[in-house]
Image 1 (cartoon, rainbow, N blue to C red):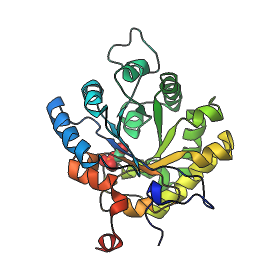
Image 2 (tube, helix red, strand yellow):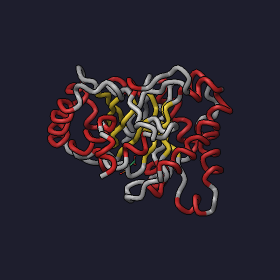
Image 3 (spheres, helix red, strand yellow):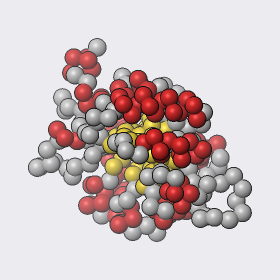
Image 4 (tube, rainbow, N blue to C red):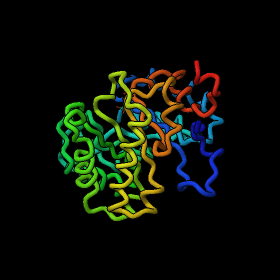
Length: 276
Ligand code: PGA
């Protein structure tokens, strides 16, 4: 069986381009400042030796500035969960890319399914937000994924084709090279229902092909495509064995330090432990 991938163990000699795994927590709308500080103090210590994967916390906007200070000298990157596409102006309640960058964010989630389905974000909005993120020197995590109804109607590939084409409209290969993609089947988010590793892998292969058609083989081959949707300590190892899965975007299971540390350090899980 293929070992779960940890960057350092992977040889690049004959295989696909090396893609360092990225494990990202998405706290969604959880944690007050006090709770967040307690979490980060414990988490920072628990993962301080991790170099095999990139570690990222995507937190609510008000927590970005205080947590950036705590994460400054650490190996944990900081991201926001959304941004508005204008730089500034009369847009009450919105937060811009330059604001996020100025308080120490490196990443921002764009087009998460909750933004699309709860707040009505369109592919065009997502496209503008991706542009705004790059303009502010933030790495966007561009989220795509089909609903259950779409999967059952056999429309998964059509939906992903549309989301990728519209989301990436007008972007050059160089710009796409600065992004991360997250495939999150909507039916698997927060439901406890995960795509099987094979299902996720096959879908992500399609996504990489779609990116390749626009950005070329080199950029598509180096692009990190994360899987998201009910990722847990118990399924991360088998997901990470798949060649097209370059990391995870983790919601619920990133809220507790212990569970998220186990996910981040999945590559240390022994074969015996995965059999249990
Ligand atoms: P979940 O959320 O891990 O709670 O399913 C994933 C996400 O929405 O990013």
